[in-house]
Amino acid sequence: MGPILKVTERRRPMAEQSNMPDRPEHSQLPEQQAADPQQSNQSNQGFQNPVAGFGVTFKAMFKKRLTEQYPEQQKTTAPRFHGRHQLNRHPDGLEKCVGCELCAWACPADAIYVEGADNTEEERYSPGERYGRVYQINYARCILCGLCIEACPTRALTMTNEFELADSSRENLIYTKEQLLAGLEEGMVDAPHAIYPGMDEGDYYRGLVTQAAPGTVPQAAVSRGEKPASEVTVPEGVGPEPTAAAQAGSGRGVSGSGPSGERPSGDRGVGA
Image (cartoon, rainbow, N blue to C red):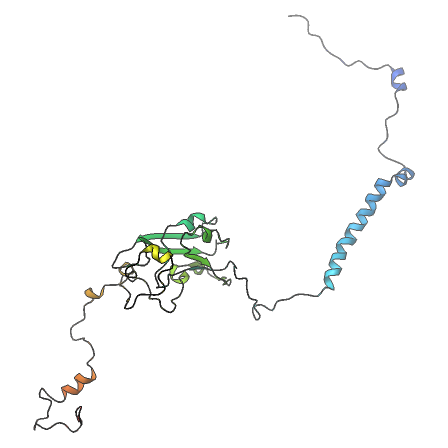
């Protein structure tokens, strides 16, 4: 290997250093600072900024205040206000929810929990094959964005104008299906009950069913622990209360007359 060459900085001669111009000084004289317009503008702005900020404060102090006396005086919310959710019904009382869980998948806060189940002819909650057996919304998480409403394919879930959802317990903020389900209106029968005769699920969504069929009666909610009427046993010695005619006949005997063959004075009969 060849010799290692060291590179050293060549010093300038003193004569060259003396000929170099002087470096500009960072500090300036007061006369130079006063002559600089840029620095003077910056100093003026630094004084005006606090004054402008206090100007907004003083302006708000003398401005007319708009105070709402809530909750004594409540304003009407907008028609499309995003408030508490509601599970809707069909005109005959059957539920619109089919338990598809699309609302739970669309929720960005993971606030909805749904469990679907199959309908049967003995226990029917919706016109289709399935219904929402369990439906819960956790309002401690819900942000009331409305994405679940857009995802619902049957318009089973909508939002009401109710916004007073505050509570001191987190457990009370978890609303169940019974709390979210809409109330019964005129012409409705509470589910479960049979589908309208001669109609199918498509007819319900076409608006062909406007009320419950005549003679519709609620079915036994077996999934909730209720027993069908055929399995309900009446204890011995407990029967239906006797009617007024039976009570009157018990005092007349079999022939409808008293011991002497005369009709009791208290019973004048139909033609009396």
